[in-house]
Length: 282
Ligand SMILES: *[C@@H]1O[C@H](CO)[C@@H](O)[C@H](O)[C@H]1NC(C)=O
Ligand SMILES: *[C@@H]1O[C@H](CO)[C@@H](O)[C@H](O)[C@H]1NC(C)=O
Ligand SMILES: *[C@@H]1O[C@H](CO)[C@@H](O)[C@H](O)[C@H]1NC(C)=O
Image (cartoon, rainbow, N blue to C red):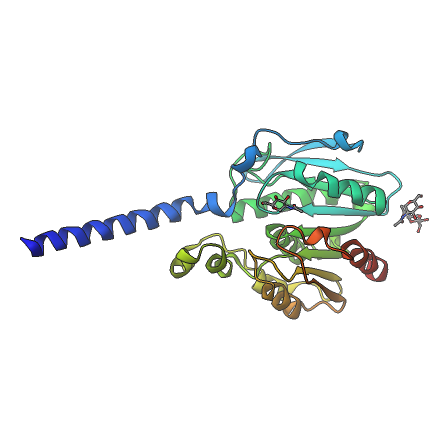
């Protein structure tokens, strides 16, 4: 009797564990891409609130998903920044940074919502976000204004992984890459963010293998790595390793002693570092 009870209990526990793992496997995209949080699908701030001129673009990816973008061009600019957003919030959250780039750097800005973010259709996945990047690069490549601009990729966290994907696949269109607090790959971030999942990190199918991709970027493309040494989500060693693996002949890493994952951008010297990099290499 007791043996039977114990066996039933163990089978029950195993069942719960298996069910939880299947649940995690199926729903991991909700964790990796929390686009649903903070009401970020219901409201997207627009550039006119910052007195920036813009056109909203609706672009169709090759797998039939409509994504939205803000095209914020300055007719007198020579350089355009393509902003690759992190995994939380929406493109509206970046508008104060867009304003700074537009007014301080006299640059145009193109910023888009990944699928499943903001008002873009669909739901996020690694393969889907790569289609989105292809779609945006195709638009920029064929636009008479953008094709004559120098292009700077600017990506934070998950945006950095997208920037590395673009840099690797569209080298002829890129003139500089700025990466902030991005990771080697998502499997290697899991043990830090979700310690209880460390033994099942291999089940994560959203990989974003920048550790591998960055080895194949064009060595003539300049890279700037901006790393918060107190990053509590992506261990700063990831940035250091990416920097070492990057074959660029013109690369720099700047470390901010007090920078956490999302406030490195407000650390002293951040924009000077960016400005120096652009003046030197782009
Ligand atoms: C763009 O380049 C031209 C020619 O080099 C220069 O005169 C102009 O000041 C540049 N514009 C900006 C906004 O940097
Ligand atoms: C941007 O343009 C303003 C006004 O033309 C100029 O004073 C400033 O030096 C420019 N800044 C950069 C970074 O080119
Ligand atoms: C960083 O995130 C925290 C909480 O998630 C938020 O309160 C804070 O405003 C963010 N800081 C920046 C600079 O985005």
